[in-house]
Length: 336
Length: 301
Image (tube, rainbow over all chains, first blue to last red; front, side, top):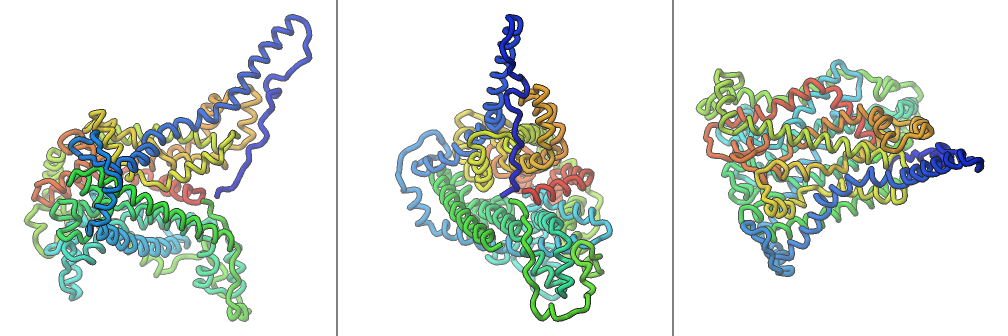
């Protein structure tokens, strides 16, 4: 992890209130005052670090950890949206119900495919853009700010605009395709086009942001690595492969993990992309993600218990991803 | 995650045979971008900005025009009319006020708490520091969406539906903030300054107030902006506990416009435009700082 900067030795208690050999009674009083100050000093040194980190951990316990664990508890109960405080124990029945539900597996598959379609091109494009931004350029700040504009745009606004752009009959994208002689595509109704469209919203919002992260990492690569590679006769492309990419490995892994976590949670884009305004992710659930399926079970079908089981399943999937990430990053560290 | 620099792998042998110094000796960051680089960049910039510009174009038209081919490429005359109607229909006035309150409180609280906690993790020694920091990092990996059901039950029990505190409280947890401030303070705050303050007899709280906050100010500003943007754009949780007619945030109001019964696409676009403009303005003004902040957080993050 991060570079360790161990704190320099803190001044000992004597630093602020140096002890003195006992003397007369006036000095005695002085001594006691100093001792008191010194005790307070010690207490301060000892406990205030905990006081400083406590607010975060208290909030995290209340609004992060407790709800996460309680989701597991709720997933073992029948809980209805209409009476969220009435819980009836049902054991693992919520889990067997969702595992028997074809729409759960459909949503899991869609989450995976949308995750791949949105993450892979996004990170590849971000890498390319970052590489270009790493050249000396005129108006480089302008490009950087402009490509952050999608990041400033909310899911809601972005999704609604793309619904229009991807419109079957009057959308800009079909018009452009027609222009080059491709038949109009039903971006809503068909499976792969709809998943590509939903992924496009995600790619649009996040590519610029990831490009900046790669760019930052590229700028941290020492120049002499390139110089010595160039002296060895490496072409630009070889330099990219053999200097840039290896140096970026930790950053690539980081963005991959963050994007994977984000992809597992996709919700707003498919919700708002649906012209029927439901939560099924299209008439045939063709672009329903797990996040959307959770919402449909919990807030449309009103089974909060079942939705909790979905949430916990997603949590377990994330733990598996976390373990894989840990193993890969250990390998990377061992190899470098 | 620190971007550790790994030594370059040896270039292929056949490349080594060449003895002349190629043009690419001035490689990496010192190389000037050629026409291809500019072309790609300009295309990418157009791709980034076009949907936003087109939102404004669509918002300036009417529904009939949007149901024709080819789609409009230039502004019509209905922009202000549509903005006005969308403003009223989507309850956007209230939504702006609400979102500003929520995002403001959330950003200020996160920045303050993260700076104090980040300082403790960066510069103070205490038992369990590394274990607690690991928990913070682990927390970043768990998306808050997985906790919405119990939170929803809490909100229902407290009768907080349609009340802003239902959105504010869960938004105050930010492990990223703690991590971000820790990484910044490790480098930006020299130990000698803290020591000097200690020798002068300053308590830890005085050190935080008089030394840490001033030193952390640039990072606090960046974190504040990032958190403001994030909270402003939060979707799922506000969507669950707030309603468009009750006490919406901007996202809830805009989504409500899209999912409502408004058949008029130009109005929906007007609402989307209004919901996006404030942040775009912030980015236009502070763009350089925000870019710098994201990149700083990336290298140290």
